[in-house]
Length: 361
Image 1 (cartoon, helix red, strand yellow):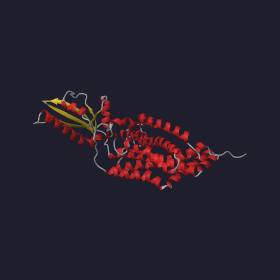
Image 2: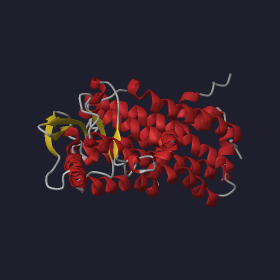
Image 3: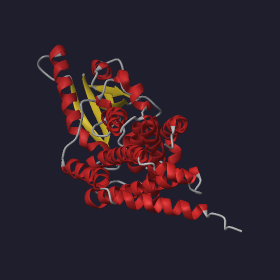
Image 4: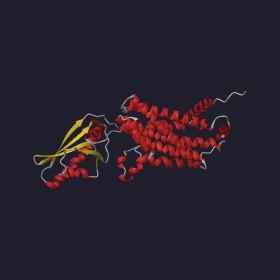
């Protein structure tokens, strides 16, 4: 009696061959690893920070009827957030708020207190400058001779938010989406065109193991890239891992989920492409808008508020947000249910379409 074909060994062999073949491709290694590292070096070496808008909260004990309070809450440059006192304090400590502002009237003048944390110190000088300019303008309207308010500062302890804490998660997302979509699309198109996929289909190996083996090879390669990027950011630029090794593992889990989702788009593109020349077009139609909308290179807050509903629904946005929450804020996977849910929904939809259009020849 013929010995039964060992599917497990076949899966391992395909995975190993796929993993080794990726390392033999200079373009895969360059765009997945060296290009993101170059960007990390550039962004990590830049000093300063700030933006064109500030997320602030108003202290509940503030005098809300005065001109200073009204000017702050109605100025487009300020995004005034609401919540309980505990929630507001927690956001401030994690760097999600620039400051908590309190306005009180004392001895005929107003006192504007800025309560910040060490996690938002990079925004404090610009925030003070904006508030001083606002007070000067209001003073000219009310009392041309003297200022109508003074500014005082109060700081609470929080994590120091560094530029690398914003850019490294973005570079991880940048690397994963590019490698997964382009790599899978070109790989399976080439296997189909050269009839390798057809011959593999005719072999004793199950169809699921063929696809799974090729996919696992790319997953392992990209997870290795993520590990290198995190370690490089940690030891070269002191990238924040809020909960140490636990955070490191949770970043890898998020990266794995994102890879599965992004590879679904690669499978779909490889099946609908009529020739190799249209693969970059289809891939870039999916990826390029997300590079600039999903908070990869700059904060989402600088984009128009009218399109934030679209931005929040993008899979790369979900990945970038979840990576930053876990890495810097110290949240865990169960706290990122919204982002994981968005990635999961995209994964289900795109893999359903990919299975529908997938061709072996």
